[in-house]
Image (cartoon, rainbow, N blue to C red; front, top):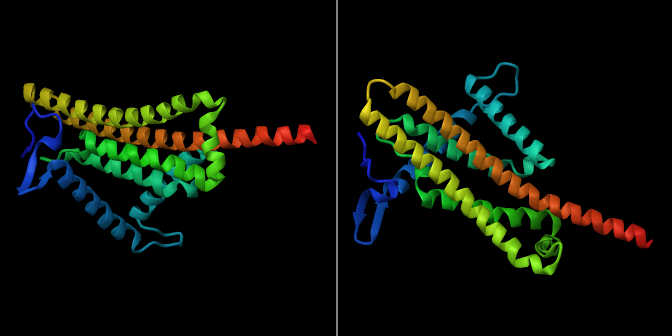
Length: 242
């Protein structure tokens, strides 16, 4: 069962339920479905965690996933991974789950909607100054926007906005175009490539989740590293004056 017509480019265009001014489209419905699935799955996997040598297969998979994400965060940021793990890990798991569930008939990934990817990108946009201010303080964080001169302020702000827009459009474009290409090819040759195309779609969805999480971590790490560089220069000047 498919809710979307091949001419429709986004699940936003499919109204699932409407009552007066209340409208639920497929993006909202499947986003909540993914969140409910992740909450129930997390509870089932973590309710019987063991610290002994004999652990369940699900706990083993969970530990591999968490260790892998922590290693990636530490490698990119050169900082403690525990500080960023809840945010970056949630981004990766949510986007990966949205994309991998495309194997379910009738399901449309919420990440094929620009509204979903824009919301995720805005979360990253807000998290960058929050992490920077929490780590370095408000004054030290804001100072980076007038580096190397105060005339760079509008360009630095435009840079922040443009990379947020690129983050949203990149994920939306890749997932939406990938699903349309698969739908077109399946309509033309339905008995030749279905399994191969589904596997390629899963791989692409997983890679896109990884890229989004890595870029989010790079943006956060770049803000803190710039501050650390500024602090190093300040300390050097103080040493020279002494």
